[in-house]
View 1 (cartoon, helix red, strand yellow):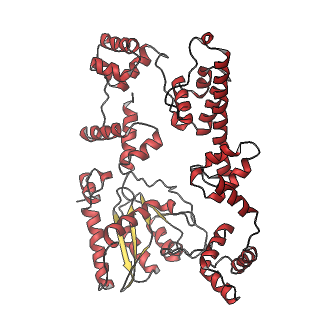
View 2 (tube, rainbow, N blue to C red):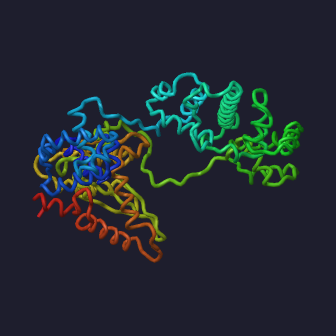
Length: 504
């Protein structure tokens, strides 16, 4: 059961994180998604509050005692007790059991987090009779039935392999045959484990790879590495390769590399270009040396040698021009929450490229409700672009309001004009770390929504820069006045402020 304070804390985080249940559960560790949605509905229905309710008072002491007794007398199953009596919820029944019979309710262990290696080792210990099954299961915190389920899955058995209750009825020959079958099972598990480890360590594959999906050459290398400790027939069957294919690949591995000289020359060309050449340019360089070879061979050799050419990556507009002066401290530390308007402002610059030219936008976002309090546009990312937006935002400040102005390390926010304005308006400067976009992620989120909803997926051919800027102005006004936000209870930023009496 959760207290009123715990419920309110979860709901407030739920609203703060834009109604993302995963973020709340990851941070608090409770509750489940359905419960969180129910608490949110109750929170809104009670005027942003959750009244205290004592669930125990709805049931008499006799009903509680009867439910707990039924649980212990009918298999200790919460769901069965609830179905039989018609009350209460499983969560509430569990709390009654812990209160009336402390320590008696069985605790279940989540086996999903137990590594496969530990499961395999436990099954090997079980088969080798290194201890009672109960002790092996208790060591991992699971039931004996779970241990035998692992054994059936690993050995592909349809029924549990158990010793008969009357061991004296079996002859020595039967016991020896049974012991031999256990040894075969152990050998098979050890072989599977060795193959998996060899696939990862020797061939450098991912742990999730299926050994049966390896190439015949890779299978042969793996088989050769395990020959000293395992039979050849068992290895061939385990990796899935015919003996004829294995023998062919084994001879091929012993043959000298016919591309040895070519391999050296390709490596020289690649490193001579400082890693800039891909297989096509390497092919051209070889052709200039009058070396005739196909591009496919070059591509394969470069892949085998790990020669990967440098790749260009598209970058968005960046206003960073180096450390031109000492940067102020990051006061926000990724906490983009403000209890009142004009407490925390975010800003940045983004670029729109259309056929008519480039347009730059500099908005100022209030973290109280995400409203874009001011913005400016220009065809040039100059100082006037950011200074005019700051002047417009500062004109909305009331007496005694001195917000934190947070941005990235762009040169615009380090020029004298910006610094002088911040000092004049009483704005405390704050900056992200160099090249760290998560430090200003709320601003990046605004740009992402703006471009998805306004810019991407539209044909801007035939639009002039003036027409584009007019359309962008119209979108931002719509964003402030009409676009609903779930974190604001289905209201736009302006509607939200009106409900609080902060706007006319």
